[in-house]
Image (cartoon, rainbow, N blue to C red; front, side, top):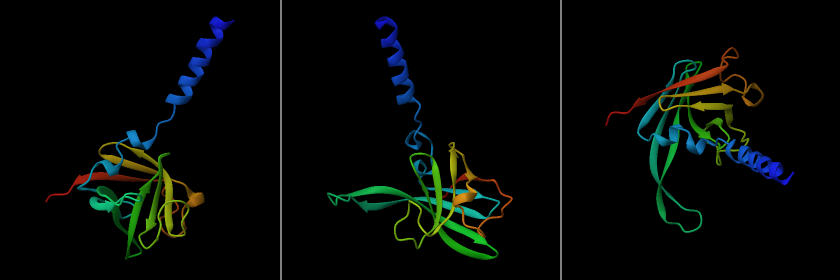
Length: 150
């Protein structure tokens, strides 16, 4: 019995520890500073930029990456920020949100991200996406990567 139980337990442990696929290992836009990600429908673009930030505990400067862009709705443009979580959730929020991230009032689009080096797809989650920002018939948004010429 012990000869069978030990390999079975090891198999179960290995399945649970390797089944997680965090976005840390995926080619999210954060890994491509100096690029622009463009969606044709709806009219959204993001620019991935590096900036000097300060650590929360030691205040040493370091280079961080942020994704900022613009969405055009009914002829009006709004500044937005894109954030991804380790689970693959993608949040598009208005940039005047003081702390971006978890269920903020200015999150306008939320979905699940699927990433590759040249494309990002967001499967829209209607439950958490504010009405009026994108056409209800749009089920996913596809962004194509473009290099920014300096």
